[in-house]
Amino acid sequence: MPKKISNRIEHHPILTFVKGRLVKFYFEGKELQGYENEPIAAALIANGIKVFRITEKMKRPRGFFCAVGKCSSCLMTVDSKPNVMVCVELLKEGMKVERQIGRGKLV
Amino acid sequence: MKKSDSEFEIIIVGSGPAGLSAAAVAAELDAKIAIIDDNPIVGGQLIKQTHKFFGSKSHFCGVRGIDIAKILEKRIQHPNITLLLDASVVGYYEDNILGVLQKERFIKLYAPKIIFATGAAENLIAFPNNDLPGVYGAGAVQTLMNVHGVLPGKRALMVGSGNIGLIVSYQMMQAGIEVVALIEILDKIGGYNVHAAKLRRLGVPILTSHTIKYATGKDFVTGAVIARVNKKFKPIKGTDKRLRVDMICLAVGLTPLSELLYQAGCEVIYIPELGGNVAWHSENMETLKNGIFVAGDASGIEEASTAMLEGRIAGACAFESLHGKNPKAQEIIQEAKKELREIRQGPFGTKPRIGKEKLQTIAP
Ligand SMILES: Cc1cc2nc3c(=O)[nH]c(=O)nc-3n(C[C@H](O)[C@H](O)[C@H](O)COP(=O)(O)OP(=O)(O)OC[C@H]3O[C@@H](n4cnc5c(N)ncnc54)[C@H](O)[C@@H]3O)c2cc1C
Image 1: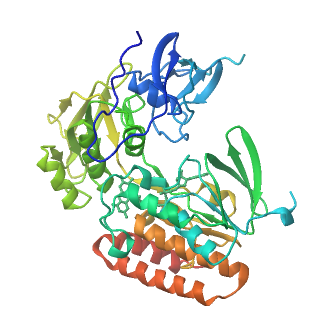
Image 2: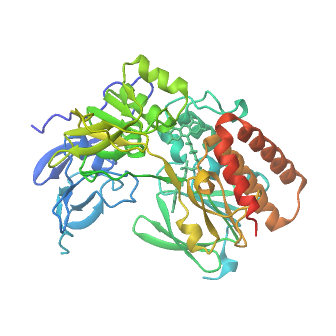
Image 3: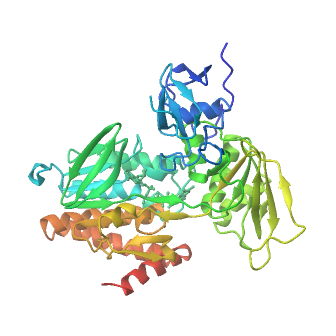
């Protein structure tokens, strides 16, 4: 069974969230669930994943930061493609998401 | 590209309150418009604002930001308006040609008039470990929480007591995040008392004359060390306090997004009261570069109501610069200028008023 999604807002006094279909995707080979067409970053954070990549030189962990596709903090490898900004790239069923180490590898 | 091919008379970059207001006015006056925004929905900052807005009655005071966005969206349902969403303007080329990246497609668009209503970017502050996952801008927290319904953390430190810091703290509490403390380096809060009072009622400590020294954590934030500061804003020895938090939210101001205006060759000037570098603009929101207008936070950090008014002026003036003087346009412009003056006479309009006046005194 996939792990229960934990960091979702269940009840909000003002907002209701309209979500897509619940789909499977993979993080570092592990099966997780997220909603189709939400940013990949939202699905990862909902599953408690914070470290999105490791920097090239200083080997520092990086994660979600600007949320609007400007800062490059959240670059990950998605379906073998490196440098994907997961804060704006939308989740699709079966996506394989990997932490990016350094600049990632071009295939 | 051949300019004669262009189907647009005015391109508006940004669909926040400024861009949408400009579009509504110009379309009504009968210009052909394109609005470009990098988000999948229109509204800019408004789509994340669940609180009831401050501002004047005629500008939706008391209406929630998310609902203002819906009202403005209705106003741009007009046959003269083409919307390009999920599309980023990534460059300005000579002769008013914009490079636009939409998904993986690159297109060039031309219009004789361009209005930049690109809003602002969040400021950062320097402290050790500020690059750890778990340190977020207030805007990012709002996006994740209010647009996507995901919690960025469980226990937060908020840095900054302007309206954004106060409001986002309240929004975090609404979403179920515990705000452990809100710190402010100045000796008094920057935002409205009503917003601070709401937080105090919820038991959130608001610590003035405090700063963050560093974040702790190896892979992500697990804590923060704060300290009291002296009159020179330096941490006072022996006042360190260690907070157990898993997120640090920064609300330390905004800077106008002026890059594209730079690139377009506009005269860009540093005006601290407007939040940083802004393109010089007249009271008609026209820059020194022929055919280029600016409106909203991109022309100086202010608020939604003034962004809408500046948008209306820019839209009407852009129309007049294409089609000549027009009584309806004049009416819109004069009315909006009058309302802008009124808002800037108010206590919270002082800074932008001084900033805008400074611009006019260094008029070319
Ligand atoms: C937490 C918070 C609370 C606030 N509360 C209030 C309030 O109560 N009352 C009030 O009056 N104001 C309030 N404001 C301020 C108000 O939201 C802003 O002043 C207003 O949204 C500015 O409008 P704008 O149209 O200039 O820019 P924005 O709303 O920022 O819109 C700019 C748009 O342009 C897009 N864009 C930028 N660059 C590009 C590009 N290159 N290509 C494509 N698109 C681009 C952006 O993505 C964005 O959608 C608040 C702001 C915040 C953050």
